[in-house]
Amino acid sequence: MLMQRFILPKIKSSIFEKEHGVFWFSSKELLLIWDKKKKSLFLPVGSGFADGQVADVDVAAHTVIKLCEMIGLSAASFFIWQSATVFVPTLSSPLERKIIKQVFQKAGFQKINLVTFATALKTFAQRQAIREGVGLYLGDDVSEAVIFSQQEQLSLNFDYLKKSAYQTIRELLQSEVALTVSQDSVAKLYQALGQNLEIQSFVLRGKNIQNQQVVTLSLSRKQLKTIIDLLQKNLELAWRRLTANNLFTNHNLDQWLVVGDAFVYHFMQKQQVAQVLFLHSELEIIQGVEWF
Image (cartoon, rainbow, N blue to C red; front, side, top):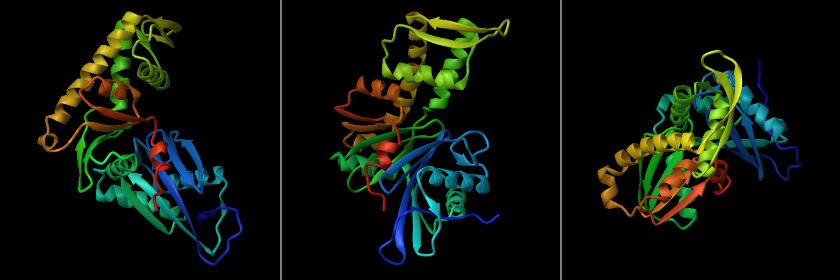
């Protein structure tokens, strides 16, 4: 089936006007900024996206079109040149990048500019007058670090993923309180820990492992502390592996940008770092710079 391109429903002043969309997708959502409008679309199973990658080009293209429609875009015109900036993991392969371009081409974009997460973090940080430092991006499926200065940027793996943290929490709940909970409930608990490490209680609803009955349980401060301690231990290991890299000895690392994980942000505040700037989501990056 032939797919339609989409444009903003407004009168154009000249032939071949240009419209530009900025996209960022993860395992959970697809983000879009277009003509000062912003929108996010939850990515369920069957969206064409899975685990932070494209699972099906045609279905993913339909998902992109759906998001464009939600923000007020309409059928294409011969007189509109549409382009898109799409953010991709820094260590993504040439094949993965080719597939991402195919998705947006099928959705009707004539020009697709791919920007790495590392470049995105460096560019945003330097717009905030952070000329030299480290950026950390924490996604569900991708985590990475970038050491940057005005002259260069160097990308590194950061061995701490939110989905791994979720699995740690799930296993602890199963062993400590015999409770199986949904991914969404685990994510909400992790978010609550990131908002307040001194949290005294948290109510969870799940299934008892032994009898499979649905139960509601209030985790105590002691139980929450056990979870926090184990997460921080895992984060400490990732931190040591990262900072043991020889690249860290040749750069000023007093300024950090942390994106997407409040729990990691609180951890960073306890390290010997002069300044830590925290962004709650990727949306703050893509709307903080004109990506043309």
